[in-house]
Length: 255
Ligand code: 1GP
Image 1 (tube, rainbow, N blue to C red):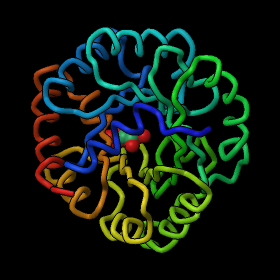
Image 2 (tube, rainbow, N blue to C red):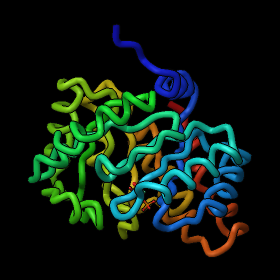
Image 3 (spheres, helix red, strand yellow):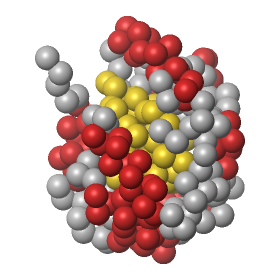
Image 4 (cartoon, protein in one colour):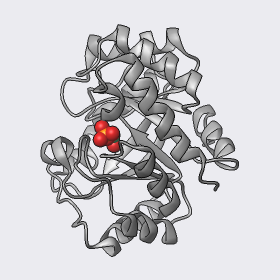
């Protein structure tokens, strides 16, 4: 019998009361030690989960060490955000079992998923099926995964893919502008997607400030993801300041 797992239940329970903020840590950009410190700080400041992954190099021992360090430093759920079947770590709690629906390459739609499925089962990691959609500019992930990025002025295309994802059984939709994108996913596109789907909507890529986080949440994102703003803050103090402001922007918007 298929049952909703612990992490997914945690997400749903929290979403009844508030919008959520997830911090993304890329093992290619942060050391295990820094990842641990950022995770501890995230928990203190009210972040709801830590995502771990990236498009390049977030695999094997490097990935394991970062996940272990986060688990030792905080009690937040750790959710894998894999670039391919290599992005699986047995130390994580859950994995966004994602299909990049607008890739031109079937490897990123179903291929990597098939190659990783038994590993996920063997390790007992909770899979959370998710439709992953790349929006312009798409940045590294768009290029690496051979996406046909959704044009920023075509919200309806995003809405159609998102609804298709839901009808195919995916229980989350993620709109991704790409890590480090100069601008986040357009508000009109977030609104158009939110208007047609019933599953939670995650938005990430290019969200750096209180204002960004707030408008993305107001447009309808249920979960807001930030990576670069925290990872590239330069110091822990600066990361703390940025994180505080972003969390404020997310939490001020009521569901
Ligand atoms: C990337 O959506 C995430 O996969 C986060 O993007 O690094 O721009 O915050 P940023």
